[in-house]
Structures are given as structure tokens and as C-alpha cells.
Image (cartoon, rainbow, N blue to C red; front, side, top):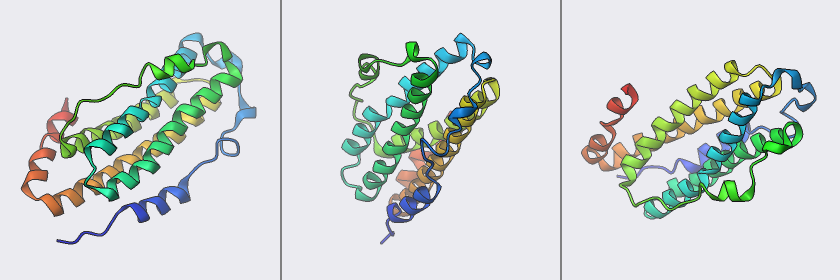
Length: 194
């Protein structure tokens, strides 16, 4: 059964919604008295965590060698995830430079994932993007400084789009692999309920 590639359409959709690090972040609105030390430290941890998209991308490319469409989409996903790390680091560079992650701290999250079944990995990443969307929306509410609140709202929208793209790849897998894909994705209900 022939299934059209998703990458060209997803690329155009994501490109149309892409935000600019300089023009779309209201850097001049920063209010230092509204950023606690605890909040600033969580920003550092989020920047480091987002950097982990690097080993995740390497894993996706390795484990999906037979799916050029999905691997091409990884270029968009990787770009946007690294941009999340970059915008958080830029925030720290401007406003809390003592907390800016070092290259060593960033490199520490780079590791090789064990090989895993591609469909189960896709399902897990779908769940992860949905949870990140919710988490970043909550972070935007928890923070009190307006610029970081805006950044987290922007990132949450990206994560929602990523989840939507993964869902489309899951649907494509069901069309192509049928029951094998359904069995892999059946685990999503248990995972999302936990």
C-alpha cells in the first residue's frame, strides 16, 4: 500500500509557524525582581534537558533507517528542540549568566540509547510531547517573570505540534503495518493514564 510522505507538508506547516529568537521573544520586557533563584535554576535544568534532543535524534535516525520520510522530519524536530534549549540559554545569558550551562554540562546528557523497536519509541515520544506541552503550559503559569512565561508558552505550542506530527506518523504506521502498529500503540493508554 502506497502512503504519501508526511515530511513535505509538515515542513511547510512548521515553517509557517516558526518563531524568531530575536523578533518574537519580548526581551526588553524582562523584570528581574519577578525571577526567583529557584525559578532561574529550573530554567537551567530545562535548557540542559532540551539539549537531550541530540542523542534522541541520533537514536531515531539509527532505529528508523528504513523510513526516510520520518528521518527527514527528524531534521525539523531536532532543529526546534535545540532551539528550545538555545532560547532558554539565551535567557540565562542575558539575565542570569552565572547559571548558563557549560558545554560540559550539555555534553553530559549526550549518551547512546539502546536499540528499541521504532514503533514503541514513536509512541513514547508522542506521549512525551503531549506531556511536555502540558508541563510547559504549567511552567508558564508557575513563573512570575513575563519573558520566561512567554518563552514557555511558545515552547509549549511547539511541543503540541510535535505531538501532532508524531500522531500522524503513528496513523501512517497503522496504515502500513496494521496490527503490528496497533499492538505497539495499544500501550499508549496505559502510559498516558499513569
